[in-house]
Image 1: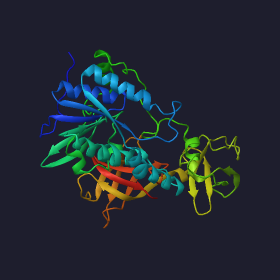
Image 2: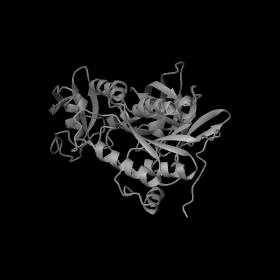
Image 3: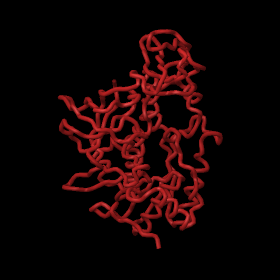
Image 4: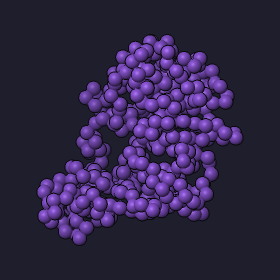
Length: 370
């Protein structure tokens, strides 16, 4: 018998839960778990992208069929809703603005805050939902009338980084059924209950857009503005197609073959000079231009609604990264802060999120500006 953990149930013990279903194994198992726990479960499939929507890159049609198949098997109602206009206005427009400004945004962060936990939440409540749920690997804890966002117990799958902009209001009625089980168990459950998507590959593409060739995709929306590629000494070694198509720390696809100084080290994108349309590259993973002991962040969002006290915490400056010890300097602004790191951080990238943690508690974060 499959053992279920019921700690995801908040104190209000809602009866009707609307769960976002993508057609993947995570949201499918999460829906089954909620049904097993006695909830009235309704699945909601969100279609949020329509431009160049073809079978080559966009799997929306197959994903919908997978959702319907899962819903039939576990015995829940399911509906599809189109948030393409909201996605383009609230997420994609910002995505393009950031790339045009030479930064590298993380659309999944904004997509969660504006679509999955705003447009979706509003729609779910209009259906009479007491709570919403998703297949994210994270946890919530209700304590003293407040809600805390916690890391998932499976550290390899934890997605609190992408959820750090959620507010108290958004988290108050959210369930994360997968927060306390490992991904391996999720797939085991899927196989045991006969889900046809038990071995379906996890999506790694842009939120809702899919796994298109990224540079080709950007080229449809952003102009190519060629400029020089220079070394840190100022030597011109090539030409780039446009700063928007490169990100700090990038090694592949720069277009520089061989070694310029004979040391044989790989080339990395190290800086962007937007004003002069210049891309700077360095050789060697540990080049000083790729390392930073401090960062500044803007547009901060704190889960509790208040700025944490200045002091020692840990942080991530990109998703696939272990927590790093840091000191928060909150300053006088609620929207700006800086972090100091005892150990240098690699390729700190403007546009990405710096997310702050106090142990397993995700406090929030901001957009790296420098």
